Structure formats: structure tokens, C-alpha cells
Length: 305
Image (cartoon, rainbow, N blue to C red; front, top):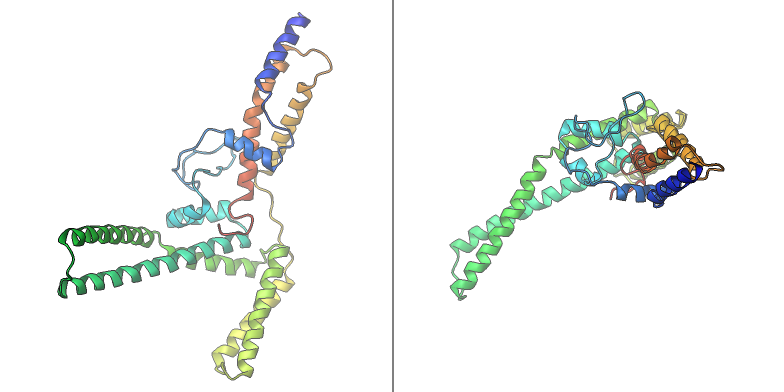
């Protein structure tokens, strides 16, 4: 019987020989994620379905990221309500929300540029139809007209798509949320240093403008006073420390994986029931990698890319 158990344990170990190290470093977690089955593009992570979730011990584990879509695409395409939920779930920090705001502002600028291009193309087309016909073969004119029409339709379709994303409303709402975070003292130590430096630079510019006679209105003085009050609020606030998302679940998975590591290197032959527990290791690694990715949220590196 011991020999049979040893053979069986050897087969089971062979079945999981391509698993990953227990500490699940960043590269290994990424590898575990790439081995997971691809998830559908929809619904987005803030949808009210259970897609992408993993059941926790208390039955309340939160939704995980939909990896098939980039956060930059999601913040633009999500509905307004879903966008608000996503900010709470995946972008709780000031730095993350600043990245989202820069994405929204870039898309708003892109939309305005496309609308201006559509207007200029429409005016050019109108002028071309009323002007003299150039000495060009009719076939060439027809092909050029078709190409311009396709480009015009594609540009118009993109404009309509962005216009329906409520980009301005999202940016306005998010800016208000970020202002309230400053007022409530919800900035980390790094964020406080960044905001302090920005406020000090703005105050310096306002002072230079006053000395140069560029801004002498009561409104400019009031703006400087409000900025000094905000700066003092940031300086007086204690740095905020965010609790790690899925902290308890991550600790439980790491504990279970550590126990499996002991089973992989037994000092004596193990019962069949103990050996069979090794089959859970790939699933645990996959869930751990997903939870660590979700705990970081979107734009955790501070880059809006």
C-alpha cells in the first residue's frame, strides 16, 4: 500500500508540475492570470452581475477586474452610474482619480477636434459642389468622393459615440469628488506632497501676476485666499492610509497555498485524501492573482495609459 500511494502521489505531482511559487510574486501572478480562461468583454466590472467574482468564505467577495478591456476604455465607455460605481470600486485614491480625469479631458479635447474637423469638411464639401468642376476623370472623382464619404461617416460615428458617453458630466462629477477628498483629508502622504507643491506653485503665479499688474481684481485676491485655505487644510490633515482590498481573502489564500507547499515536499508518504488537495493549487493561484490585481485597482502606477 505505501508503494501504491507513492506512485499515485507521483502522478498527482506530475499533474501540477507547471504550477507557480507560493509567494506569487508579480511575474508569477501575471503568469497565473494568463493561464486563466479569457473572460467576456461585457459586462463591465461595475455591472450588477456576478461575472468575474470569486466566492469568499463569508460569501461576500467583491467583483474582480474584467481583463479583456482596458481601464482607459472603460472610464470612457461606461454609463454615468456605472462610472461612479467603478470609481468607488477601482479608483478610490486621489492619484487614481486624477489619472481618470486626465483621460476624460483628453477625450473631451479629441471630441472637440473631431467636431471641428467635421464642420470644416462639411463646409469644404459644400464649396466643392458649388464651385467649378476641375478637369479630372469622372472615375477618379467618384472614388475620391466615396473615400471622403467613408471617412466623414467614420468620423461622425466616433463623434456620436463619444458624445453619448457624457464625458463632461463625468469630468465635472469627478472633479467635485476630488475636491471633497482634499477637504475631508483623504490624501495619502505622497498625494499630500504633490498637492501641496501644486498649490504653492499656483500661489506663486498669482503673486507674480499681482506684482506685474496682470490681476488686480477682487476676484483674484479672493481666489488666492481660497487657495491658501486649501493649502493649509492639506498641511494640517493626517496622511490617509487605505485598507488593502480583499486583505482577509488574500491572507487566507496565502495560508492555504503555504499548507499545500508542505504537501508537495512530504517527509513520509501521505494519505490519498491529502495528496488530492494539491489539485486545488492552480485554482488558488489564479484567484490570488486576480484578487491582488483587483486590490491595486486601475491606474495604480499613476499613469493614464
